[in-house]
Length: 295
Image (cartoon, rainbow, N blue to C red; front, side):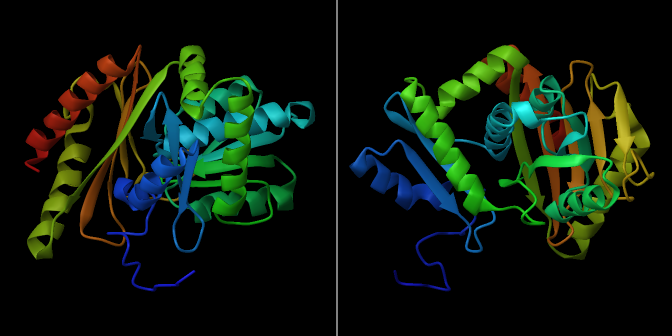
């Protein structure tokens, strides 16, 4: 109604930031709304709040993506083929991949950034080798269909609303639907730790952190049994300064310097039997990383 290029009602107009939906959640409480949807200014990412047992709970990008994968696969089940493919980034957790594989989809990983997912769509249309069904990344970006080469919060918001309506007709919320996925595929807890290190000293510390992790390998992170270094051209991907550590149960941690800000980011995907166990384990691992790298 009143466009404001300063976005003065929010600290940051980014649905990845939990407080970006604060005003919408306040309105939702007054209206007793079932669902809150908030996009960023160019409407390519969308955050979701769900009324569940009297409280509003915000979903993560990974959780929304997994729900959308399940929804799209169920709706398109009759038209899926051996060429049908899910494309996700290497720092997106594996719940959606497990769901897609259960429906017979191929799963392809790309580097961080939706442009890489868009490139795959164009490649598949050119070669006919695969057929793109859905793609997403943990940073709240999703695309179902090939009408765009970027994440699309317009279609995603409609699909999320459809999912919520279908669940409500069965007496369930999107939180209930998510719990059903956890029960079938295992519990996944994802987290992102980001450290801003300003100035020349900060740049040096970021590089030293990556060098230390790369040199020590699995010895750096207790319990891990495999490290993938994406600077060594891996899995057919372009070289990128990303390290990914794996535990035997499928949990992983990835380290990546930001390409646009003086930050180093750590992505965590922890598998467990339930939330309490996963949260305890996540806290331990995050503390180990902070101490190791003196962050």
